[in-house]
Image (cartoon, rainbow, N blue to C red; front, side, top):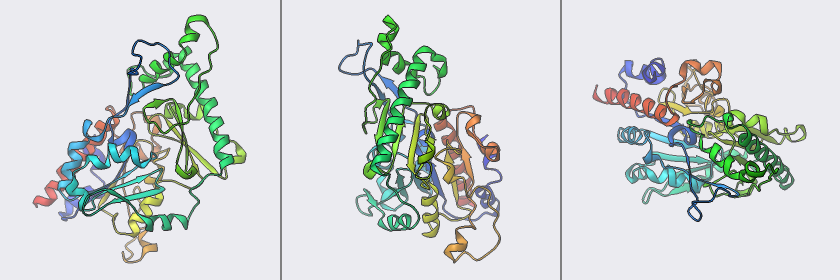
Length: 376
């Protein structure tokens, strides 16, 4: 399937033309490159059937199937740009610091966080992530990246009500989530949160904490400087059933599903396309040398799909305004569900395996293509 997906891409045309060039990978992280999370028993009381939250483990990149083919592509000169809705601390540990120091020192591991509102590039000596202030200036020309305090308070209430309702529904009907699927652990969480209700029929209300602790589910995250409010713990496919941005906020807030089990509320107009435009402008992303991967092409990865199969009109490549429109960036969806993929991307969907396995398959095919180019 991966080979078929790549056959007509720009990378495929590069192979046929035997052009020797490095490539850039634009990759979503949660639900794409990173292995899926799983629930664990709280260490302080492993026998308890009752808790106010559940503990979820989030494996790092090296624990999943995409790590090795990605490193081999970096060895061949590729650049990888991880673009996530999450915060720096989480994905510096799970993604950025996982990749070899030699490639970070070369500047070929880049990380955009908080729906692409912050961009980090590696220090040339120690490889640590450094905030790209030029990108901050670029983004400030386009949109606001902060939600007002009153909006954050209202969104927090919307999130709490939706999360409580979902876990009540899930406790009553575990069939809402496939037990053996990637979100099966949510069924266990619902059972723990509503243990009292199962025993005596009481309508138990649990507290949904506001916290940045990624091990706690369900939770609400309020990102630094009010850059986003995130509801964590409802499957992306069901998010719109439980969370709704009211009409009076829709000019200020964009709400969309992210990853497998998040719903992001971000300033209107903020999406991952701003990072791509900036990287095109700075020559990190070039037409015919870039491919994008994601699991939410109709959600928070939509900004990565805007250049999919764009026709090239032959204009010169030395003008920023023209260059912005002259780049085709094929997008490959690794969603586990066909319903998550828009019609124009159905032929670019790797399915019947987990998201991370789909990403690994695509990366392996790219490695073969780039390796063949290098050898010719």
